[in-house]
Length: 162
Image 1: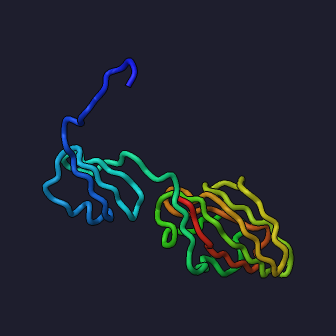
Image 2: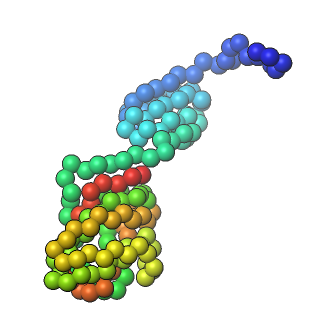
């Protein structure tokens, strides 16, 4: 190495564990500084002496669902209304891929927003058509939406990115 201080050894040996988060939580006899990689979360943890602390996290994880669960099948709301997606995406925020099916008999504009506001992304969907849309779910696993008319509508979750 040129010009700087070199380090030939690491002064302390630490254990590194590679397992699911629940199995990491069940470990005993850990030393401060031990590392644990949660294979199910793609997160690297450091043991603080009392708890696992996140030190790095996989930037995103795409969840492609094996089926597209229907999360709504009724007349669309015409005032901004919340829809709970937490049973599918959990309670953390996520970028969600939704499919809208308009069954109203005429074209409708659908507005989706992370927060309870009339401002958001708008998609126009003709009667009988499907439209793929994406939106950001809020921290509690839901979003807000409305339509330009109270027409029959189905919503499906295709996948999500966390």
